[in-house]
Length: 340
Image (cartoon, rainbow, N blue to C red; front, side):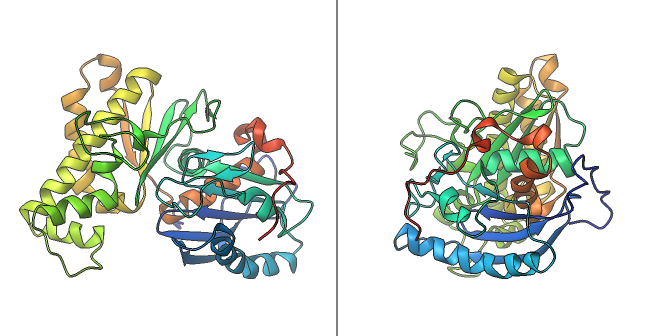
């Protein structure tokens, strides 16, 4: 977290205990303690398991959580567990089925996490909503009434704040902007559709498209940061990859704003670390596509919370249930799933 950022005011300051937050992404999983002031501590980051049985993959998360849980126990315990995950998610059932992590189809992570600290509430939220709530509570979206929080990383996710509150929708997957169609004649997507935004704008897509166009990079382990360095050095293939990603994001953002009449879009995730390479292309695309006056007033901001956005957003419903808790997260986790 940035040292300059002022802490949000918590209405729940009477309970100083932290939330154990878990952020499940396509490349890595982060576990940390998040305080009522959104301060993040005791962070542990591990690679996301992409093979084996779901129970074996969850054992990696359990091992990562052991240290933060033990340290919290020595200081009075935790007030709850907040899990943010790539989607789709089903908070009512407590399961996740990330498109980019096929090993975790219908994995009952809410029930599994409940075993770490019996008796405390466990909240499961889609990673897009976590980005939106994290930035709305403690980052670039503070004070916004209607906004989209978008993460551009291994995949592309999003979540909506409408009327100052999260709007997860009936299935808890509203704002899933990565699967907005930006190219109807485009390639097939693992979600079952074709031409999804994620196939152009995600970090995975950026690297794949750049390599297909002849970019070699530093080797097989090249990252979007390497691609960004190449673009800054005026490599035409790398430059075009970021330009295409920004334009596709702008097309999707404009479409969502036309439907939801938003004031603000906050963009985070690993690809957003490219800075002006991506945001200048988004701004140019917004000017191109936003014809109506109410669309031209929409602001686009870079997320302020960095890698902590998902963790803070996962903790927000427990620290600020008055503002961020969804009804399905108030139910106890199902007891029908055996523990791994």
